[in-house]
Length: 168
Image 1 (cartoon, rainbow, N blue to C red):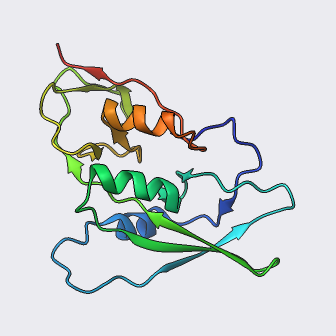
Image 2: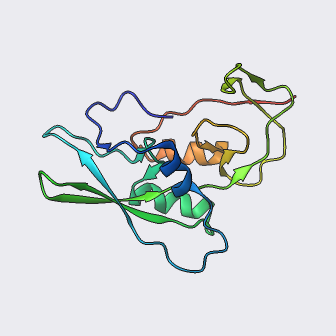
């Protein structure tokens, strides 16, 4: 989740939901290297570049990518170049596309508009240490406790962790 404590964070230009869906689509089966994605950003003198950006796409810094690769060595990454045209500055981030896991419990509760009311995951069915939930329209990234502890020990910026309920 986005860490609201980071003020003046860099803001990539907005994207349509269809663009986001296409970019986040799983590249498995494609043998070619994907070209970098260029995103314009809005900055000021006080702009902060955190280690994790959630909107419009889940992006991680080089430092965070290095840590996540230790937990998921086979994960494919796509370079994203954040470009500030006014200041002629570019910064490299990495698109985080973790696998989708079918792990929702039957006890999960939904609002009428199909957004999550109460998230409950099935115990013992999570294979990937970093994942998204299949069947959920929310763009959140979920991580195992070991990954969370590792992130917190290294003082990454831009992340906020929230405990998720597990099925009894």
